[in-house]
Image (tube, rainbow, N blue to C red; front, side):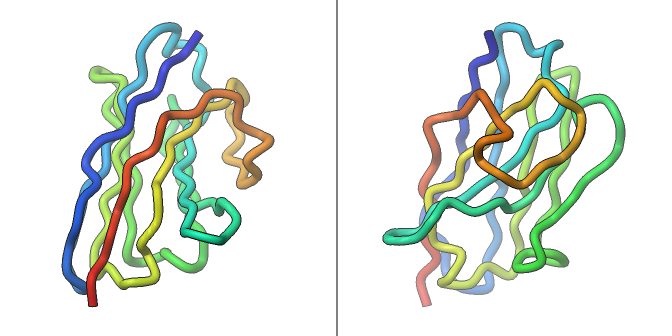
Amino acid sequence: QVQLVESGGGLVQAGGSLRLSCAASGRAFSIGAVGWFRQAPGKEREFVAGIRWSVDMTYYAESVRGRVTISRDNAKNTVYLQMNSLKPEDTAVYYCAARRGTMILSRESDYDRWGQGTQVTVSS
């Protein structure tokens, strides 16, 4: 099985940047794609960005496109989420998730392995 551990969250002022990491362990070779999701208080969990594990293909939610970059380092089995020009509305718990299939999908139900989440708080 695949285990995912997120890190890199924290408190940042509006306009600042953060880089989140998602380290995969276990059967990482079985990963087809990784997605980042976020859940703000009182809101549904939403897709942020996704990347295929073995091919340079990415996809972004419209709400973050241009401010967020997803990347991976296969040697480290780690996926990153670089977030710039952060806004208070980016405040949420950020989760990474993995799926066996290689398509980058945006529904929670398409991913079967999840990390525990990392809190991102953006102050105004």
